[in-house]
Length: 76
Image (cartoon, rainbow, N blue to C red; front, side, top):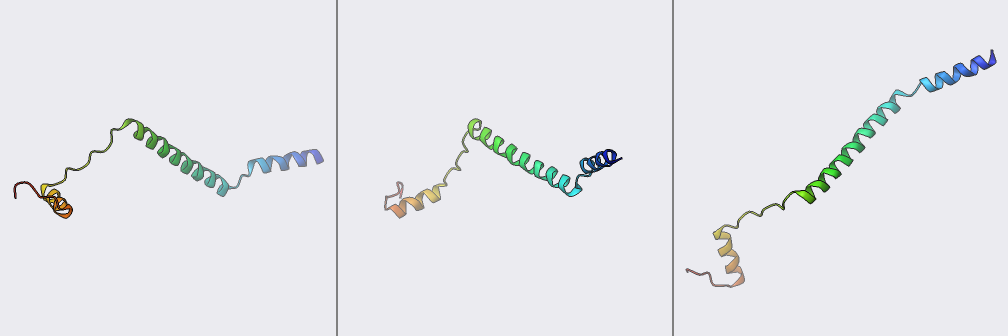
C-alpha cells in the first residue's frame, strides 16, 4: 500500500504542471523565436539587398549649399 501511494503521488506531480508556467514558456518561446527570426532576416537583407538609393537633391537646395560655402553659382 505504501508503494502504491508514492507511485500515485509521483503521477500527480508529473501530471500537474502549473498552467501559468506553461503559458509563460509558450509566450517566452514565441518571443525568442520572433527575435531570432528578425535577426536572421536582418542579416540576410544586409548581405543580399542592394543599398538604398539616396534621394536626388533639388537644384534649389544645391544652390543654397553652394552659396553657404561661398562658391559662385554658374548661370547667375
